[in-house]
Every structure is written in structure tokens, then in C-alpha cells.
Amino acid sequence: MSKEGARASWNSTYEKGLVDVLHDNKDNPKLKGQNGWNSEGWKCITAKFNERFSLAHFTKQQLQEKDKELKSSYKAVRDSRKESWTGWNDSLCMILAEPEVWARLTQRLQGFARSHFLFSTL
Image (cartoon, rainbow, N blue to C red; front, side, top):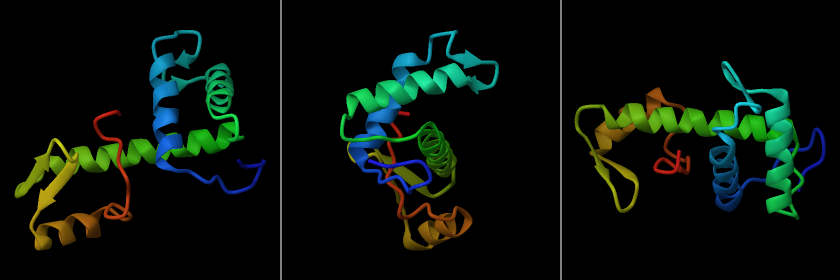
């Protein structure tokens, strides 16, 4: 899908696929260091992801950036669920809040309102 230096074109299928590949390999000690994936781990993840999606040709850096973005989104949802005056709809995987609470959340967490989350998968 993308060449080195080109902007990655992500969709929800690719995001879910990346999360699945990361989950499939999370218990392999050869692929992880003390603080996360090592270089060999990212090479393996990149190869498996591109094998799974033969039309996608994402680079290691693009997958690392998406992983970082997904972690940030996960933390935003997790922290927002702890806020007073918010609820959670399990079937829709959606935060429920009054407009003024939602405005406060989105102001504090830039990009929060327009993000698509894989919260239950992460």
C-alpha cells in the first residue's frame, strides 16, 4: 500500500489486522525486549502483517507509528471511562456522556472525538 516515506493509508481492517498480529506474537520472548518489541520483533510483525494483507506494503516505521497511535487511543478511552459523568455502552464500545462532558473530554484529548477505537481488542 505504501512505499518508504509515503503516507500510510489505514482502514479499520488493517488496524484490526495489526492488533491481531501483535497479539499473536506478544508471548514470544525472542521478539520482545524489556520495554517492548525489539528490532527482530518488528521485522517479524511487518512480514506477517504484509503476508496477511498481500495488497498492503507497510513499512516497519508505519506499523510502529500506528501501534503508538492505537496505544494513545486506548489510553484516552481507558482514562475517559474513569471520568465522572461518563458511561460505557458494551454493545457499541462507545463512551456515553452529556454534550458538555464530551466537549471537556475532546478538548483535553486532541483528536479524541474523531478516532475509531478497537478498545475491546486492545
